[in-house]
Length: 119
Image (cartoon, rainbow, N blue to C red; front, side, top):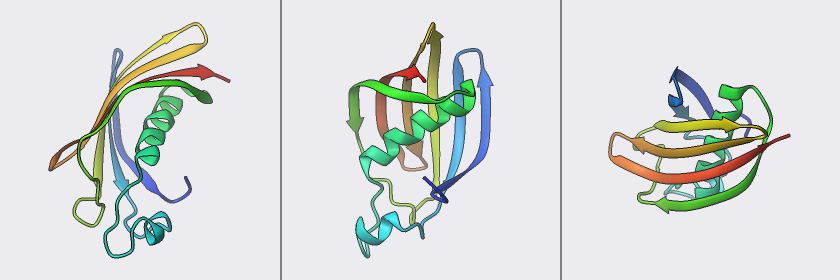
């Protein structure tokens, strides 16, 4: 997603990764979702984890399955444009498993468990 965010910081230790993103509050996506009250679409939040895994493993991935996806709060970039992705990632053969939490200063926004296939 072009110009939606920039990676401020990523740290990887073993199978854990912590990434801080700065989300562009003026991105076109917010013009329609929703004018005057920007809300980051859930599918976009899920995509951020896929892109994080692609950066860490330096490969293209395709979502195979997403389980236990729980949206626990609205992410409004006009209130706080930093989003932290806290992930546990494991790679096996042609797959990457991810368990992650997206959060900001107000708390947890998303919990997800997903499986991606290497392309």
